[in-house]
Amino acid sequence: MEHGPRRDALVQCYADALKTVWIVMCALAGAAGLASLLTKRLNLDVALETEQRFVNGAKIADEEKRMSSRDDEFDVWLGLD
Image (cartoon, rainbow, N blue to C red; front, side, top):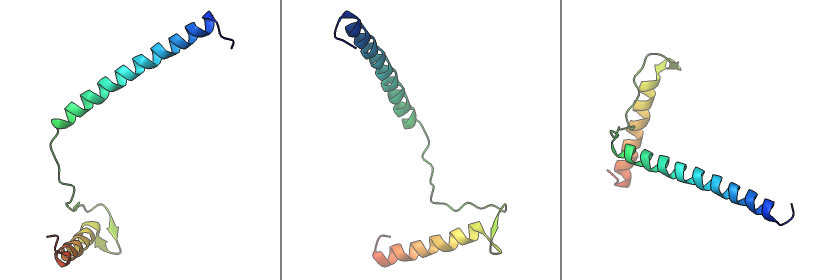
């Protein structure tokens, strides 16, 4: 497209549209950031105890407990506990 008033108008429309999208997305990000301050912190380091699936005859929760006890032993060995 050649330089001229039509090209300048098109570039200006494109810039205005991007500016609007930028403002809306910044507002949504700010709102999400504020909402995250109000959420409850949940501990994800707990084993999920369920009877829905089994692995090699053992409950998954049992395997997770066994693995977490290994992690605890390793943390003590490293002095992280």
